[in-house]
Amino acid sequence: MNRKKNMAKNTVVLTFGKICTQGISFLMLPLYTSILDTTEYGTFDLLVTYATLLLPLVNWQLDQGIFRYMLDIRRKFDKQKILFSTVILFSGVQSIVFGLLFFFITPFLTIEHSYFLLCYVVLCVFQAIMLQFVRGLGEIKKYATASFISVSFTVLFNIVTLVTLEMGLSGLFVSTIMAQIFTLMYLILSTKCWRYFSIRAVSKTLLKDVCKYSTPLIPNNLAWWVVNSSDRLVISHFIGIAANGLFTVASKFPNAFITFYNVVNLSWTETVSLHFNDDDRDNFLSEMMTTMYGLFSASCFGVVTIMPFIYPVLVNIRYADSYNQVLILMYAMLFRVLVGMYSCIYIATKQSKKVAITSISAAAINLVFDFILVGKIGLYAASISSLIAFLIMFIIRYYDVNRTMKMKIKKPIAVISIIVGLVIPFTYYSKEFILQLIAIILVILYSLYANYTFLNDLKKLIIRRLHKK
Image 1 (cartoon, helix red, strand yellow):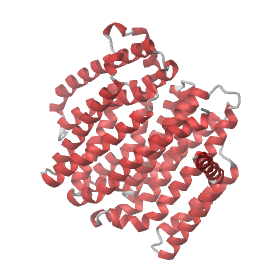
Image 2 (image 1 turned 120 degrees about the vertical axis):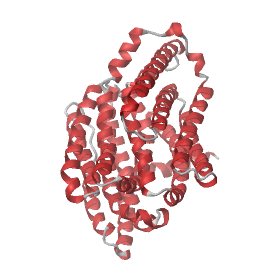
Image 3 (image 1 turned 60 degrees about the horizontal axis):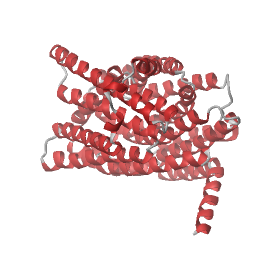
Image 4 (image 1 turned 45 degrees about the vertical axis):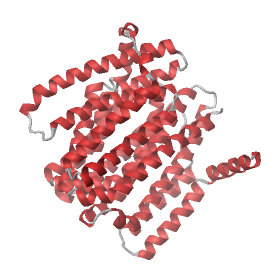
């Protein structure tokens, strides 16, 4: 199976799982926004934001380390056993230390619902390890199934706790924890991971090597947290928890967009790492970069142009003010996609320090603009600062990567996408039905142009499959 087919196969499987999970999640959005007020929704999001900050500090990004090293030892059971045993045992020690520190420090802090934060972080540690282990084994279907189980059980338990039992915010906590437990149980049972574990197999030398790769990713992950999550803390502090609820709802659509990118990125990272030393590397990477940019830019513009029609249907009127943030956040996520596509080069060459340096730069920029703008433009400060940070981060990585190799988007597609991207905001904020309809037509034409090669290849593939039948 060649590189493109293998990547396409993995992507299709993962995408199917995500389509199901995101579809379920969006169908539940009207329920969440009708039952929970903006303050409750903002509180839950704030605790998840804290958990995202704590996770890399607790697990030292060992989940990323286990995945990268698994790529080098596929189908080598003995080495996989050493790696898994080493990482999972050390992660257990880290979780125990975190729990002890948490109980010692919590009385001195004013964190409401801290029990949820503790349980959620510990479960995330082991779920992250298991997900990356499954991915490293090449078991993409199990990875996708785990994602589906996570969201499906979250929704199921949410219906029980929010609708049937009317538990409010506490119900949201309970359902989230229960979904994490069921997902972890599935990963353990489906992989029979106990076969890969032995105390005797633990290697201090290997642990040092994995940590040498993963620990530079801690500041990188913290930087991503600043870029992605500090907005919420700034909003909560300077504007209020209710405003954070508005921002959370506005982020739902960009987050869904970036979730689909993350699916493709799983296959993209693996493909780049496995084929980085191929003779035609630069041509292959530039071709794939152009193809994926065409797909994601068209998807981004498509989501933005249909938003005026679907937002009032999906989101309760109490959250109507969040509409204005969606376009800015969607554009920010498009630049985040570009950042991620170039960062795979650093992962393939194990240059985790470069990943950290560029991410920290973007985080600093994001935080500075947050504080400068929040007093002047309110909620817009969060979305605009994210857009600026991801744009600058993309520019830095683009020039850094292309100093040593060629990985560029074809100029005609890049130029036309910029023009379309500049036109859409005028129609988005105009509230004129005709202009918004014209924007949809414009995006359809751009999508056909930017993805002509991809669509043509897809058509040929379908025809060949039909002829075989």
